[in-house]
Length: 86
Image 1 (tube, helix red, strand yellow):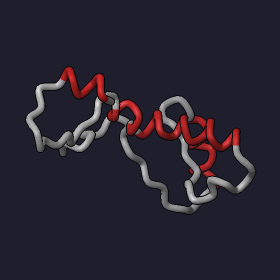
Image 2 (cartoon, one colour):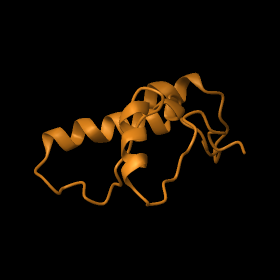
Image 3 (cartoon, one colour):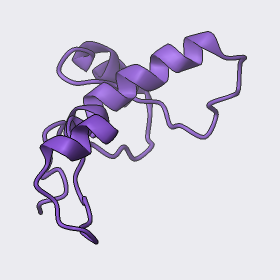
Image 4 (tube, helix red, strand yellow):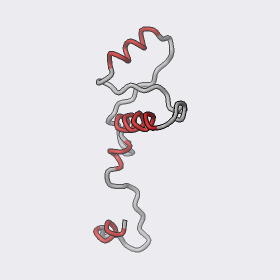
C-alpha cells in the first residue's frame, strides 16, 4: 500500500520479494484451516482439487484411523517448513 511504501527505505526500481505476514498465510496448517472454512461457504465439489487433509497433531487420531483402513500413499509435511529459505 502507499502507506507501507512510505515506511520502507526503497530506492526507485527496487523490488519487494517478501511480504509482511506472508509466512502466516502460507503456513501449511493455516492454509488447510482457511481452505476448510472456504469449503464450508461454497457449494459441494467447489474445492474438489484439494486432497483430503489432516492437521497434525490436532487430528492425529482421525488420520491414524484412515491409515489403518487404507493402502494408499500419504504425503506428510511439517507445518513449519523453511518458508522459502531452504
